[in-house]
Image (cartoon, rainbow, N blue to C red; front, side):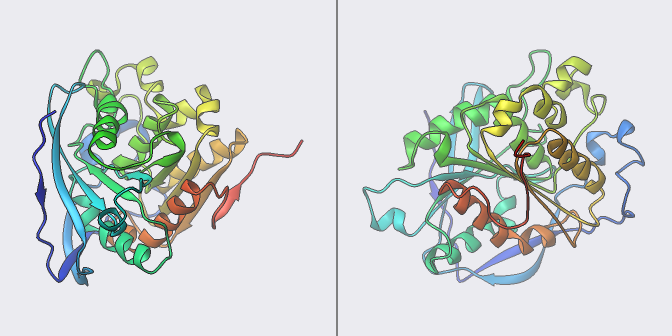
Length: 320
């Protein structure tokens, strides 16, 4: 596979960013109703620097590319490597995949500060070292498109995983792989884990966006095809797959997508599926995601270590 390697010259400062605030009232979704959503209505992940954030000396983020058989083209991705990657050359590390949101790119998680937060928490002993992979997903929703369209799901769950595990010293197997996305990437993280069972063992859905079947026919297809790509439908048709993962969901109380995320939480609860649910102050923005990076990373660290629950409201199945 062809690869291009370039190490970012990260100086003494790395900027965290924030999305423009979403000016919509609580309790609504874009365009007024779920039924008439279109992809253009998703709050884009446009970022603007809000504060300079010191980057630890030696922070290592690399830019890579590889050829994806599923897409038939070369795709870029970013990867964060912990300090121990260079010093403990026989050690293998768990992997966290972070798909971005609509309007973002493989830089988005860097913009909100994920590598800086991971580096600081690893160095301070708050979390164990891990490799963080940030792929490019354009606006494709991280899904295998309907009617023989581009296979963006296979690109991540098959091609990218294979690439990372051949290029880096990482642990293999479902229990050593986590995936967590924001916005469009949250939708992608859940459906990828369920449509490709056995690949990811830990799933985080941050500011989860859910679509209606008619919102993007080229992506999701007709009603039947959409049900195979929709997280709400997948948890009903693939209960064993969702029970095989550690699942976290969070949303801002002022996020326009909060009503649908709350509905997803209720659906999981009704199905007696164990998951963590968090609803915090905030909207659909980089400010919200940056504020909770520590929460996210502590969850991934605990779940990858096999800890069954960590913080928040843990929804457990009944004992009878």
